Length: 90
Image (cartoon, rainbow, N blue to C red; front, top):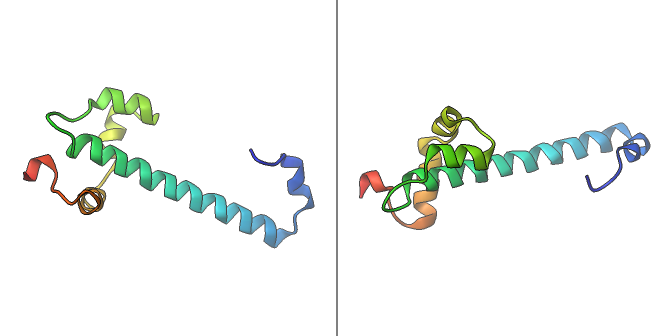
């Protein structure tokens, strides 16, 4: 944490809620990056994808969590960023 929790006592209610909303936005952005990394690792790497077990350990998820963590929209975003289709469509 960048500041001690005791500093929260000095915040006005609106400032506290703004900080909390900013933290949520950061978390959402990190979650989006994780989903993109998982989609890349499973759908765009050659000759084979990373294993579910290795990704689960690195991401702090279960194997089934890795399988369901990213969506077709995440794959589309990765494909646009890379300028190429996933392995399954190549």
